[in-house]
Image 1 (spheres, rainbow, N blue to C red):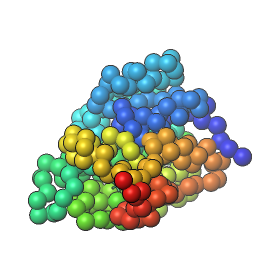
Image 2 (spheres, rainbow, N blue to C red):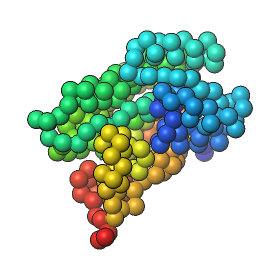
Image 3 (cartoon, rainbow, N blue to C red):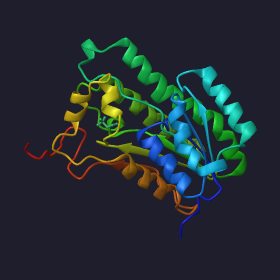
Image 4 (cartoon, protein in one colour):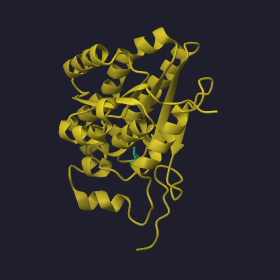
Length: 255
Ligand code: 8X3
């Protein structure tokens, strides 16, 4: 037995590329009404246009409290309280030892990955609690549960997502609200290019000799969880390419 997503209202952050965009598209394909949000509005328009009134977009910078407040008011006024919140906005910046890590990189990751996710969760949870149903999708990472050398800042931000979500899960028991924490391993998106501040060559090398996950692979998993019947909660999903065992053990084909 599955649950239909038709006419459910979903909000997807970080929807201008990669995993966020793929999840938004899957939800739209499944008949949901979807509000997509990100800083790059032009890409959002292209994504939602084919779906007419079921798709709408809005600029959102999750690192800004004011931006989040304005966005939340707009969603609630224009569309009502969402049934599904996909907290996907986030990023990695830098890959190197702690001693040479950049303050700006750390701050950006903490603001987007942690504060952004917590702000959006707090804002949209009341409507779900009132209805006694709803789905939170928290984008974590394999890095949140398997910290690796040279990724301390990013791993710390995703470990914070894990701790926040675990604590929240205990608050949510008995409310009917579900929470999926998804932990992707190597997924080929803009992720590594952003991490390396636009260095495409270095980004490409991350996936050398491996068939990585695609954004669509993660979107499939999210949609599977969202379409389970209301009494079924998929709490955590660690998803890797078959060639990846842990955050650092990867079998690469010889080049
Ligand atoms: C993305 C996975 O291993 O690059 O969150 O940190 S990893």
